[in-house]
Image (tube, rainbow, N blue to C red; front, side):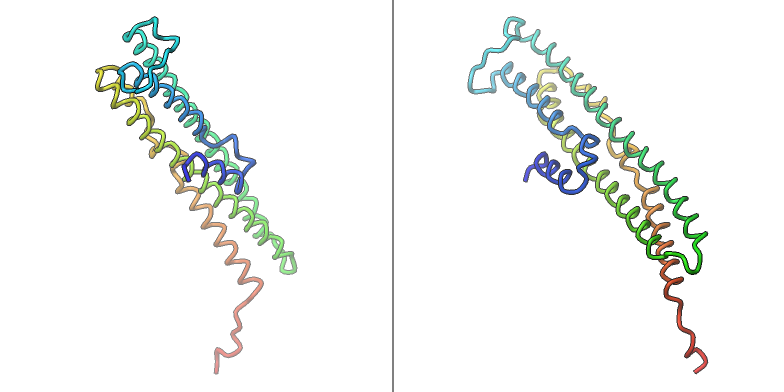
Length: 213
């Protein structure tokens, strides 16, 4: 299954409420294909002759147009990076607050309190953080695929014509983006697991009746 279809399927099956926060992979890919088609028409590599609205500009004019489209692609790419980063960081900040609330709930839990209810809240919270990890990995995969497609479809061909090859330097370094830095998220998940262990011991105290035997 191609990544675009898999992305749509995974979003609908797991976290449809976050649908608009994922990378707009289809839109980025469509723009790349459009630029790639015009490059092939210009250099004659497309076997089927096509007439476009840019034919009157001449080859040089079409390259100028495509360079502008390439810049437009990079602006869209960077906008998508910012969108994903904002969503991810906002979720992390919400989770920090949520964790403190749960820790206070556990600390103030009476002996006869509803331990099972608190455990359910912690498990639900832990599950949402797992989904955010999935969100991080899925978007990382999408951005890396788009970067590779941009290089293969656009940059290599532009280098052949000695135009616009420097634009690749404007591509963000995906691995250095906040949404792919998951150390804090893993730390919060471990805190949840520690609380669950603590509640389990409260609800199931160890039996020391046979210690002196």
